[in-house]
Image 1 (tube, helix red, strand yellow):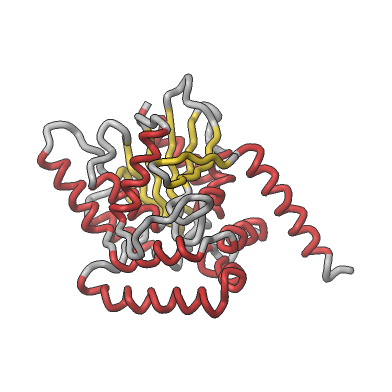
Image 2 (cartoon, one colour):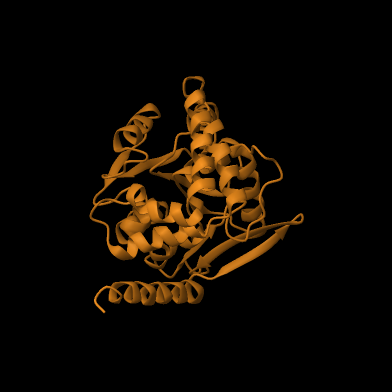
Length: 307
């Protein structure tokens, strides 16, 4: 009896979380030239005009932002996209997409949703996508600030390329040998700190279990062949040459217990582009899952600074 009780409780808690997800952070979709882009949203910017756009990482989805999104003020429009190949979003047509391909699809979504003034937040692989979005110039007149949370940096530079190809093989082998179920069982160990709550662990596992293999492997190819430094350098160059202010990343944040994109790596990235850097206490890589209130409070501060 005692052995089955925790499983029953966990299942009941997950059922409550999924009910909350559908009721308060529902999924919608839009057809863009024959490709579906799905997203989750809550809040309204009718009075405040404030909007936050959230970009998830490689092992996650729009749903993963649930607790963080609901901790934001109700007068803030929150949009969390499912990147191509995630959730109900159509994968990109190419086998080896670049960050620029994801950025174009994001631009099409934000145009369709008539987002004209937002805070763009990229977590992990989403940080590369967000940086590519700004480097392409899509953010002019649409994005006020770009925030990078536990940013993945990519393996596209010459000195990292061989390591990137090894990672592609490792990720493919894990997917074929472990399957999504096996990956989901292991993911909390890397994504969260040792002190993470059981609910956070279950949520990380659920999101991993919900991955679409084809979309996941496309994203792996992008991670291993792209480089966030190139995109941030373009943004910095645009800002230096333009007489009109162009958005540069406002800040870099990282969980103090992150073993995927370490605090030192994130700090070094921030220093390379003279960006503010701050740790998120008590958080591993999935900082907004483990510490949703703290991340939401940080987003509120940036929103109010823009008001």
